[in-house]
Length: 346
Image 1 (cartoon, rainbow, N blue to C red):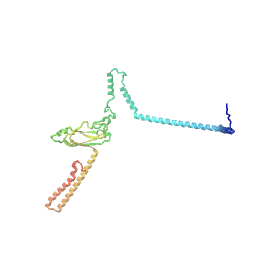
Image 2 (tube, one colour; image 1 turned 30 degrees about the vertical axis):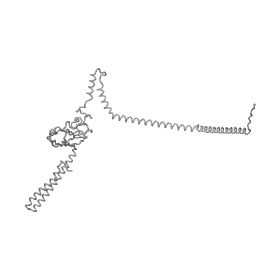
Image 3 (cartoon, one colour; image 1 turned 90 degrees about the vertical axis):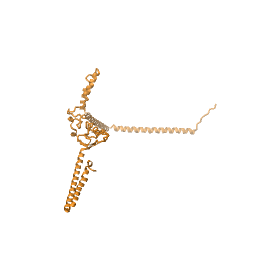
Image 4 (cartoon, helix red, strand yellow; image 1 turned 180 degrees about the horizontal axis):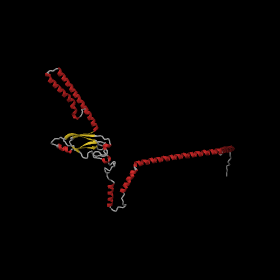
């Protein structure tokens, strides 16, 4: 058998040896550097420990650390007390608001009164009659209207009197308590109608009026009409007015009932404004009348002057007629138109 013999080249062997030697030198260098770093770190640590281990430095650090710890605890205590006092103040204010809103005394009195009435004396009811008796007693003793005249004005069930409403004995008159506006109701009516249709007397009898709150609006104390019964008419035609001084604040309407042919008309006015208008109207009429009289006197004086200056008998009658016509012209166009329509011209 033939065996092959492996032979290494001398150059290849020397290069491998060189590589192994270089790797060993590098590893030795790294190990030396690591050892040197460890020695330096150990020396620094020993130097630091030597500084900490000094007696004067150690005690100073301990004192500062203790002072800082106490300062933090004191600040934490201050914050805790402050939060506690804020919480206590909030709770006191909250309880005070609840007490004022709930009216604890009145609520307790109401609860005690109702419990005495509502809670039955017997824990067990034997039959239906006992249940009915208990319910009847509850309704009669609890749900009752406050009596007028007991000296206590039970708001809102009792209120000052106006028209047919309210309790005067306990609450007084509304016009004495509140500053109300006087109103004037003016109504014009004429029930004249053709004889072939409904008679005028029948139209007058079936027509009535009342002062009622406007639908959809709130009037203080009551929503009923001012008069308990509707007012009727006593004549077939005419005009009348009525002044009311105790009408509560609100929106009111003058209601005409069963006036199918619209034979009536009316208005509601502020009486103080009516008085002001009437005052200025009288002043105006007086001023116009005085001016008319002054013009008439001037014309009469001029006519007398002309008559004295030219005493011709033929012209006397003409002057007298002229004077009468001047007087009529002065009074008629200035005074009488003021009364047309019952008011001043615009």
